[in-house]
Image (cartoon, rainbow, N blue to C red; front, side, top):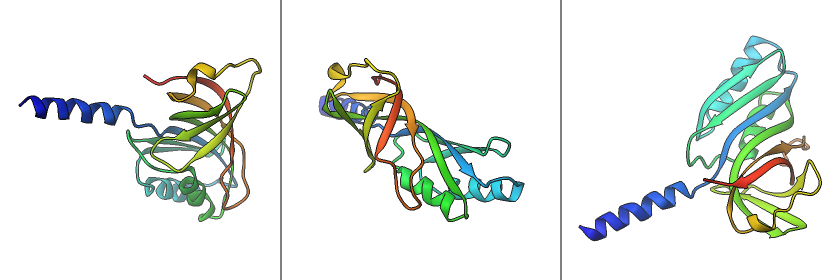
Length: 163
């Protein structure tokens, strides 16, 4: 019985340690009619791990919410936009992952995905030394990338140890 309880506790800890994208707000160029919004919404909902999609035609903004432990990668969302004939621009992201690299050149590995970004702060003077090797939650902007490509730099606004 003790072994079962310990195994259950360890499994729960492993589940809570998983990170991923939590939300992506993607600007989509050329999406300006209800059928366009419907096509984007449908394509995004077909990405495994998506729990909700909101489309704002006035702003050209697609808000993608993801389930806990989602393994969806940014490439999948870019492809969903591109296959409908649109271009994606900057994306605001809220993601969880492990911070590595050097204090002067930190890297974020979005846990559960192959997505890895070099981090650049929006404001100078942010010291990430104490966060290296830890699971962090980060909010930032992924700049527009060429068709079929994923950005390699994430300009972060906030970063903190994940709870």
